[in-house]
Length: 246
Ligand code: 13P
Image (cartoon, rainbow, N blue to C red; front, side):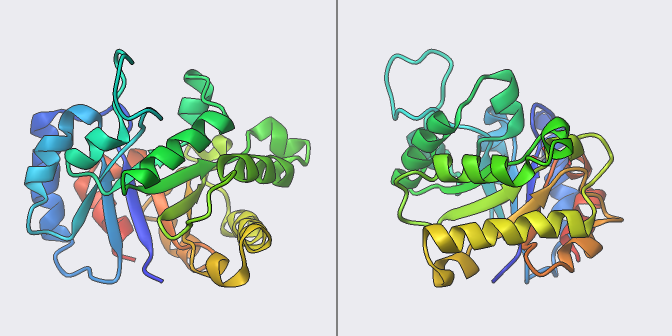
């Protein structure tokens, strides 16, 4: 399967910096063909980036949606609207949304359903905190998040799972390749139990948490790591291009 590298810009960048990012980034990645590359800017930049990536193989994604399609939900943006804005992907269930905006697995489940209905591909984030890891609860947490977020979802071909251990996000301390592989393998086996082996082996499971140009190669060398979700290191065109160039 084709690996996926996605940039999660979070609440960063503006019109000028993002257009200049795309202009240099597209030169760097001109010859990269064996990688699917997605950029997820803040909502305000979606239109601009959509124009800037025309005639490139870069795809557009967003960082969140509301689970309803339209109506009286002040301040929210729906999957229907994101599709209209040119998005192909949406990140859902990021730990920052769970932590700061009280998103629960059942809300994320509703968001996934709405995204799929509107023909958006989903990057579903799951991951444990440091405390949970230290208490040997990693697999239990992962299982709980996965089962509840995917409740009643039958169609898996448009879903990517992102394993993002919370303790590795923005800390500069990535999970070691073997720590990540252990969880990715567990996720793959779980997906095989929930669905079947054939479905499970075709689902991309990507890693996120302090991915940098100097650690991507060893992470990608793992059997069950099929790409990366990149925060900080995706804000610089050269560094993100290096990550895509593995
Ligand atoms: P960092 O790459 O900055 O650790 O962020 C990871 C992340 O949260 C991507 O969604």
